[in-house]
Amino acid sequence: MRALVIAKAPVPGRVKTRLGARVGMDAAAELAAAALLDTIAACRSAFAECHLALDGHLGDAVRSDALRRSLDGWTVHPQRGEGLGQRLAHAHADAAGAGPTVQLGMDTPQVTPADLFAVAEAAFDGDAVLGPAADGGWWVLALSDASAAAVLVDVPMSRPDTFASTRAALTAAGQTVRVGHELTDVDTVEEAASVADSLTDGHFLRAWRSVTA
Image (cartoon, rainbow, N blue to C red; front, top):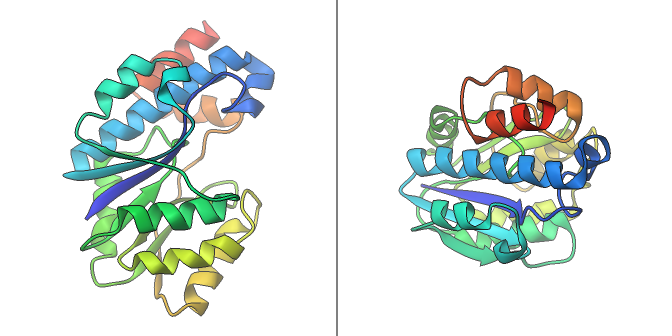
């Protein structure tokens, strides 16, 4: 089993723009970098094999040196495709191997190694596992068959019905879909504050405290 993180390089003005409209684009990029660092750490603790599908270049990102160090031993792939669904499908194909691939983004810095391992365990019998996000999307997708990710190409993303549409598409393709636990994606100031309140340590919590000090 392996982790697959889908991420944008945290460049001001390219990431967390809804957050940036409230806290500034530089601060939003710092929060994005912190969230990605926490996500990488959780994946490293849960899995021996880890992949990052990256949109952009870390050399342009804030905290680029820390991010590069954190990715030591990871396989980094450039994202391929036009829309998000196509990029997700290609990323699953690039990371495919024996056992489940647990795919998540950079929006849930509160995720723990136990969260990720539980998702992988639930997928070991060949089922897909889809974890809902509080906004109607999903934060994690585990697949044992990477080709099943092809259905994501036709799923409307970033909508209140994205979880339901993804579940229906996977089921129609013959996947048995188990529903994982819900987490909150960090896209707004209110979501960032809520997630930070749930944390006791980590890069994201420290970055949030710096932004709101």
